[in-house]
Length: 359
Image (cartoon, rainbow, N blue to C red; front, side):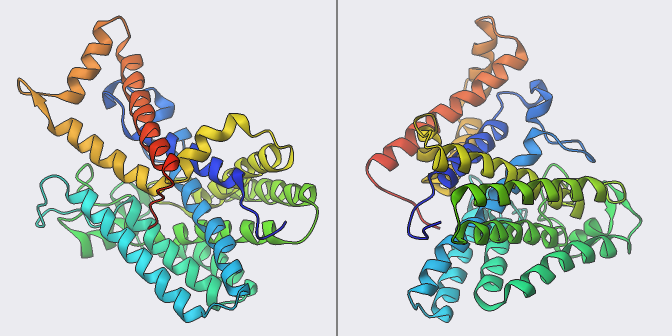
């Protein structure tokens, strides 16, 4: 493909992913949430478990398309690396801010998080892209996927809270982990290793997009890559449980496969077939993906904090939806959809004014 062209399919896929992330993160009442909109309790996966790895995979695609152009223009790799480190640091600090808001208690501040993991994976994947050959990146990717289960074998197994990754989290993060778990973190230290591989698989897809050949052949290569990773992930799952909280190697492979297939479909429909009108809302969402995600976190905290007669605005809104005839589950879904629509309005206003928040 022409490296100077912008992929509407990538913006749309990113936007759909962020919209889905906002949907699953903001139910009116988590007790009354439809099962596909919840993470798997431990082993296995649901629709919700697709979202974070899809976004992380897209980080790899996007950095490849961006850095390749800049390197071709003769920009200094060291300057690009410094720029990358600054962006990663800002992203990490933004994640810490979201974890701290609104109470800002350093004694119990959760250090890991979604944006923090994106920052670490983005930095390492970018440095590997800038300074290593494709062969070295392939070796690193499969090395990470092989080393992780070997490290996990040092512990008692793959049980929740009783595994090598949880032990390392307790060694370094006690008091600073997710409040829902306390003794381990779903974005913990060791499980970040295979998450880096997820971003590297995105780099391989980005390199496929940059090859100078007919778009139809590019789409076919992406579909082949996606199916291959999906199959390998499922086969690996026979020995290594597919688990999002541990981001197991089988999970990383399976999610990279599904992400590649999902994007390949978007690429074929939007950029090859030129069926674009339906995708415009997702493109708008995707144009400020991280910014909208940050706004969603602030809005969720605010709605949970604001109270009317001692009851949070969030609970009152959910109860109001249930009172007008919606079931408890439907009311919870409608509340989440309202969040998606409100934040789409914010994304549209930013897009209309051409204000793009870059992290």
